[in-house]
Image (cartoon, rainbow, N blue to C red; front, side, top):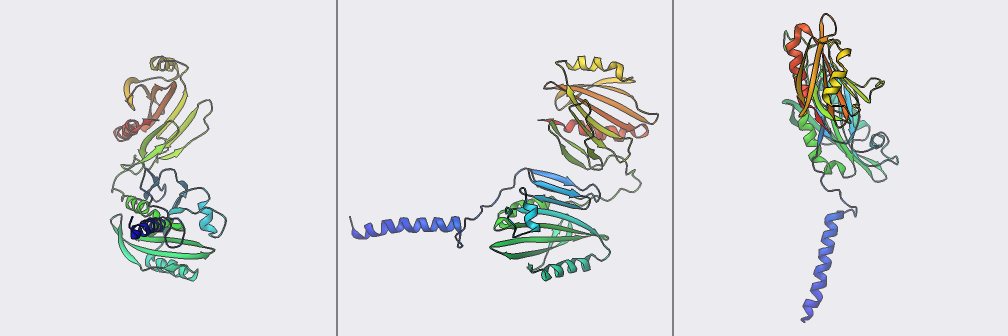
Length: 339
């Protein structure tokens, strides 16, 4: 064999290994995190201000009216509070809302405060968010001991509110999650302005996602979800309307090997019916019984049996607004998907 071939063949293999190592570990000798793909997303809707934003399914959330945070894994929230603490690296998405009459001035004050706290601010960029002018302010902070935080604040202002959307991560995770951050930002929506003359207690035209251990569903955005004491039931969940006399309630309990017809017959004596009927929920047969809850409110009980469980859905509506409520409730029922 030619001597030059003997020399250059192993040399070529060595260079290939070195090049691969460069790709995997980068210049600093540390393994780089590959780009994270956008997967299934969940929607959060603020119960007070009405904005909504999507975040990756499975992330941890912490939310109250006007302030929502989403973290990629446990204890990441502690890392953002104490960057040099012994907590895992991760990323976050945060939305906060502040009432103000001087949004531009408040935005400048926030940026100035970050500079005072040793954040390095990048060049401000004008962008479009939810169809409105917004401002992207990138930043970074070196906290020492090899800990670096990178992120951005995106400010969106209305006449009386300043929205601050923050997306950030430690190490190289901010870059790795860029596609996820972009998808989340693109999902951000401000509440629709109220239609003049419309009764705001009626079910909203905008629906949001709900989920429990038994099924997924959609419900009006101005209904609040709660899980009261379940008593003798296996599971209870209530969707409460803005008008407190209106609601959707889910009760789950053991069917005791009874068929839908038997369950329905057993409940005849409990509810004085003014009418009855049949329906379909999530592709499964259901039967309903209607009665009056009060002189102004009607009530309908839907019964169905699925995998040995009874799902009873109770809906209440104002008699004078029957069509508006039943249209919304039909959307809730048709959206139910069993797990």
